[in-house]
Image (tube, rainbow, N blue to C red; front, side, top):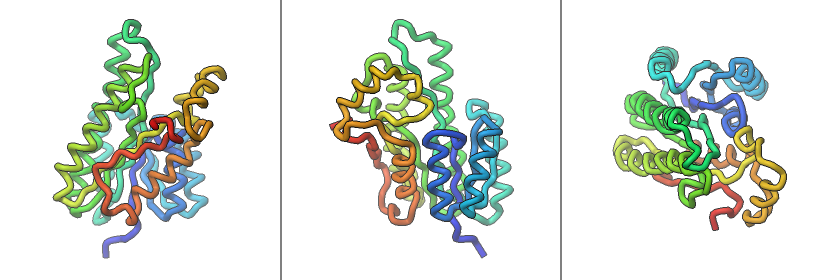
Length: 248
């Protein structure tokens, strides 16, 4: 008998939105496969989710290592056996603040390798597993800056713009096979990616947000949890802003 417990693979699960998503999906009864580079942090998230009753496997993988990612999915396929991979939630990513003139090509390559290259490979391998069951869901993280742009974040915005375009195209390509594809586009969220912002910059940003505060990781995770649920079964090709009204 095929298990009806949803199985969700979450990247970037050791901290920030990825960690919050792992907690949210554990509470919702998902079996979890958590991926990140920091083994100690992953083990802590695993323990937190197990307390909530979730079955949790962890894998320390550098997502820019294509061979390692391929090996990971071979292992996942073997481990799943007859179970379906219900969701890929790809939260791993890199943000770079730099004026275009100051952007080094080596930094450009690293950012694109994770934000774009790894994203495409993960979608490719996850969708192959999902095709076996003619169902599944790919959930990616875009960003508010992909739509509006941001001075000093041109390369980062370009990488997230690629993610948004990928969502639209894959939703059309994979929809007939029963696979949904969506993204959330967070605004300014309190995570490690924004921890370096000065207090002046935080105040400046707050004045541009309708709700007059930065967002929290668990608020993004709640939206992801909904999109990964059966209640969202007719939603695909959508990029949902979670930005407190910053994009208005």
